[in-house]
Image (cartoon, rainbow, N blue to C red; front, top):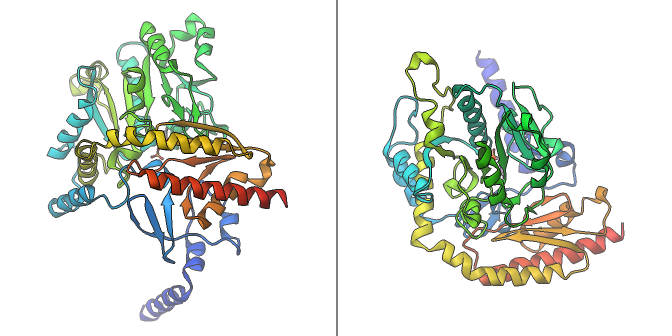
Length: 444
Ligand SMILES: *Cc1c(COP(=O)(O)O)cnc(C)c1O
């Protein structure tokens, strides 16, 4: 026993002596990452250590602008005093308590605050979970069961859109219009039909329309598709189409929620109220994995009955309603009010748009797609197998900008607290990276 414990200890200390990069590569498996490349000797992963405002700092003391808000999560910058304080204050009380059979004040405060953005509407119920995929998962399960309880078992077809992205759990992934992300479609007693555009709805015959449970869409802009914008008015048209036929509408605002598009929620641009609103990423200000699915009283009411009838929504996670997540989300929403964040966004949009116009004018830029503080900059003139987007983002690091591409589209989605001079600095860094990367790629 003693001997093996000693051997164990020696093994540990041997690992401790390795340098960080080697230890990292020996121990980690990263999401969405070709690990063979990650492990390659020439690749040096960046260890992010701290953050303040729009900046992140690595373990070598290098500073970067967080150009994609830590994969679209961060809202008011890193180290926001108010959110920090709220989490610490909550920690002093309790970090987590079960939401199965118990409740707490923060859950109520947060639900009321979220529904406050849709006051006067039918959105009157909030179901918490942990991430964007589970927020979508809830909406799927609720839709299917809703129809079942109403005596419409045939309504189990979901409509989603080409190149849409809704998450990675089996249910959420089955909706994805990106083939790479939905290799399990059609296994769960429901069907998914992926349409290219809203006009395709008119091609669905009557009998199929009667089997529809819900339509799901990323409103106004598809994120993972490379920041693809929907035509203006499309969302309200879709709402009209679903409403006419009594079909549920699920809006996946996991990316677009919390001010990114220039409105608090993307659906507000077109005055649309869905039957389900899925929120995650920015809900906690980008601090903690926390999500919410908002729905209507009429969906909720379908689940009300004596327990033995079996209409209970048997779904949830151990960390549902997490106290720290709720506290962070409340502080996030309060900060929007206190600091007039949406007013700030409106004020800086002209600077942002002007800077993007300059980027658009560069010869290697094919198209700039943007709404609010979200932009996708698609480059041209490179072979697909050159991974130009990734190359540009690697060069951008040298100029102090950290962001991630989607194929040949470089994404810029800074925290909402960005100031006009910081926008200039960020765009300068991108421009330099575009020129350097282009020169290098053309010489290969
Ligand atoms: C990121 C994202 C998801 C998935 O959220 P996770 O928290 O990563 O599970 C779902 N839908 C959209 C639109 C997203 O951008």
